Image (spheres, rainbow, N blue to C red):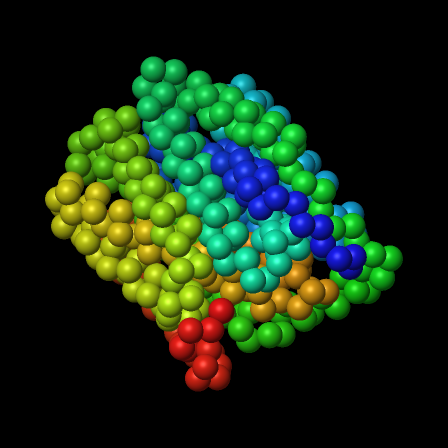
Length: 397
């Protein structure tokens, strides 16, 4: 690889944050209207959750090939194509004539979003260097949380007046503006060298990304923590509008909890500097579990508080694990490691989100809480089981 260019940090962060807002507003926009989709198409919670899971599942499948492709064509073309195509599909989605067509468009949209999700961390490392990656990834994830919150709130608040079709159109309009910011401001990336463009080198990088225990542990955190997180939010609308009797617009206010996630993820660099990566990840997972347990009583204040705590813990753990994987990946496997992390992350979203919705639909909220806490315990075991040097448990970055 050629020596990385050093554009202004603010420009890099602006472009990537705008891409994150666009991508994640689109990716999770259907989540607040899952009860409306279930009512219109006569679906159970598990079937309705496919409107989210199909997109994240397609993203998981596509992310590694696209990350490998970025080693050949560069990161910037992938990111630009990603934000452009995902918005075009978002603008088409309100016109879907049936639920199967909607799911097909969502699958294509997930593939498009994989371009940004799979290479953004590697792009930031190349632009800002390893020393700034924790703060940079934290800033990127903060933008992602803003997008997730903005998309969900826009959908939830506009659904009653415009229906779910109109609500998805509103989110697509917001994403269009953000994608334009990205295309106009994203600095040129590092051009791949001739050796890096060989397929053999790309495949070797994939093997490297799958052999290092420290990277495997981060993939486990991504999959299990994300599965628990999405499962809880997929079922939240059904519980808030059903068991607790709220309107869809009021129920969507639970997504304001994402503001806490934005704060916790943007402070990932400070947590790593103070506690070290392993303790920071384990702390985030423990906070997640505490938040999930708070939602057990049929008390609206406790449920809301639980989601606030859950969200803060999740994005802290995710930001640290994502930056950890990016920093530990060798240069020749950086894109592949980023792709593997993202694959695990969205595989967790797709499988965990659907399984959690099925558990909730058949057995109720308590069983969903139990399943989510078990997943988090497994993620914590993956980190605690790393045979790392004592120094890394102190204040290593």
